[in-house]
Length: 311
Image (cartoon, rainbow, N blue to C red):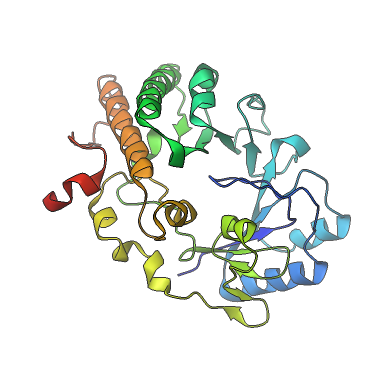
């Protein structure tokens, strides 16, 4: 059941996930479509996530946005003070100044695996940090080895923050400890996107890749073909997997396997490297008396497909 409506305010709205946004020409959603999108969300009882471009939108748009409960996702470049999610598009941009204003924000860092590895020592943040690896689909065995080392360094950083009596949240490590079931992207099931052209898409990536790949519009509503394929219940191996923090990005799935509910080998291995690093962090923290009621079992595989017969 839908819970969220993502509204891209402009063609150049910031990416907050695996996909890149190649668009450079500004195209602001029409004010009438913005109002219609807000009305749609109200009727469907959906929480709206407004995704901002890197320029200040007109005052009449800002006024309309404030008529409904919502979350703001904005690039770091525009310094939107009331943003709920702040996106950094490189490690070079990344900084998390400790201010009262920043304490409840979610910070998203998008970077490739090698860039994250080079800068992992700078990620000491005692709030919420989501790290998005943007080149997972190209990972080789060397990249997997490097990523494993990166996660080990990040684990030690998180542990040090805990020792300072803070409670950091880093999606790659702490999410798996806290989760009891899959918590994936769920685009097409729990969230849908309204693009600046007034049409609905599975997620922003589907719109940016092909504007014709629409699943409805504000007049005729939403019509997702073979909607059941987006559900976890139709992904038999993923149902048995316990890498609960895996995004199972449906766009990345389709891009790499041509199936929206089937992750690639690379996405599975990365998710299990994170899962195992989470287990190591948990064991370290349990020695300090924390999270003693949690457990993550040891496993001997990185891709569930390779041991599918066990499932």
